[in-house]
Length: 192
Image 1 (cartoon, rainbow, N blue to C red):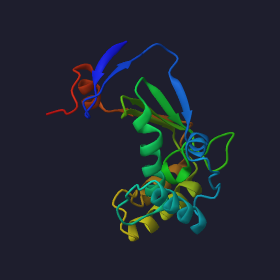
Image 2: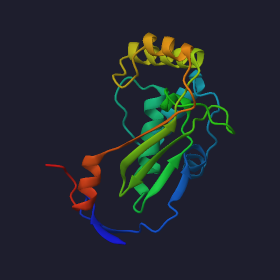
Image 3: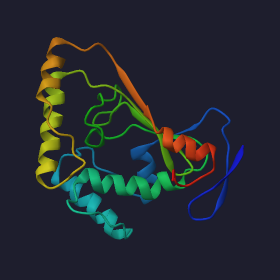
């Protein structure tokens, strides 16, 4: 256990005793908002529901208010900010994970997790999507978000899709923010 000063001045105890808690994204948001979430994340109804929830909880979201951006605001407010000791947020919807493979058990979710400590993302990992037609479709969906003005949307990568047509064995990827790890180890809230 270490004591860590959060950016708001609060000092929290971080318990690194394994196993780390796992927080399935959608069921946890449903419990936090006392509401069922849609299963078709690409529908206009899903965007409307996420917009209404953000309005209800007074969460501002910059334009364009895509379903992915609105959902990300809800995750940040209800899940990420409540994490002190290490925890994994798991099972992200495919609209938040355009490069991740569909979940083996849950439709419309992906095999992805993010590790959070003290409210900050420390690592992101997922099983890589290796199906060229699905990847191309996801890129096209991202292009639609980009046309609406979403600067975080993944650009179309046709060369990558063609490479997938040649074959990609089952693969996983992960990334860790070394700057955030250093901040955590030095008990700082900024890398400066």
